[in-house]
Length: 350
Figure 1 (tube, rainbow, N blue to C red):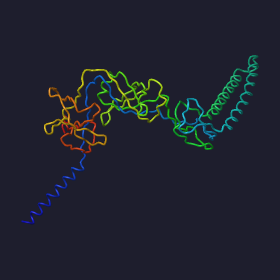
Figure 2: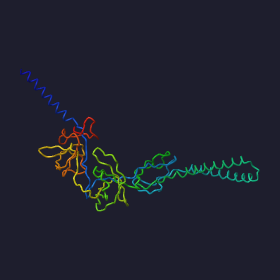
Figure 3: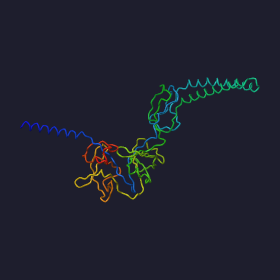
C-alpha cells in the first residue's frame, strides 16, 4: 500500500511539473486594437524621423579608368555638380577620327549636290552619298556623347553617403561609384493611432521640432498615410516641409505636434471583449513595446450601450490594447500579435 502511494505522488509531481513547464513555454496569440473616437480640440505629440527623398546609386554611362574624384563622403553637393571624371584620351581620339571622316564626306556630298543639280549624277547615287553623311553624323554624335559621359555630375542636390572607388581604378558602365542621399525634398515619417487616421480631416496644423532646438518649429503638410495598420495598430504618415529645412538631416529624431479642431466628443471607445473585471474594478491588457502585456485600470461610462465600451479615463488614443484572449493572460507575459481573430473564434471571445 505504501508503495502504491509513492507511485501516485510521483505521478502527481510529474504532472504538475509538466503543467508548469507548458504554461511557461506557451505564447498566447492575441488580437490588438486601438481606442477609437473623434478627436477633441487641442493637440497631441508624436515621435518622428527625418528621411531623405531617396537613396541614389550614381555611376558613369560608359566604362573607363577613374581619373579624378572631386567629392568626399559626407559632402553636400548641388544638382549638376561635377563628382568624378574618367580618362578621356581614347574617347577624344575617337571623336577626332570621326570628325575628320565626317568633314571629308561632307565636302564630297557638297560636290555631289552640284553634279546632281546639273543632272550629271543620278538621284540614286546622290541619295546614297547623303545617307552615308547622315550615318557618319550619327556615329560622330555617339562618340561625342561617350566623351561627355566621362564627366559624372550629380543628378540632384544631396549628400554623398559613400565613395565606392578610388582614382586609378577601372569602372564599368552603370557601376555605382557614389551613393547619394537625395535631400532635395526631405520628409518626416511618424506612426499615428487609428483615432488620428480616421479623423485626419480635423487636423488644422502640423509642426515639428528637434530636442536641441525646441523653439524652432517647421510647418508640415500631410503627403500620404499608408491605409494599413501595423501589428500595433499604428498607421505610417509621411509629412513634407512647407519651407526651408536645411538644419535637419536624414535620420534625425523630431517631435511632431498635431493641432486639430473640436469634434465634440472627448471619450474613447474600445471593444467590449477587451474589458475584464477584477476585484470589482474594470481593467484592460496593454501591449508593451517588447510584446509583453500589463494590466491597466480604466473608468467606463456605465450608461453607454452597444458592442463597444466608452472609456472615460485610463487610456490614450496611442495605446495598444488586447482585443481578444484577455482571460488567458497574466502580468508580464510575452504574446504574439495576430492581425485578425481565427475564423473559428467567432466574436473574438477567445
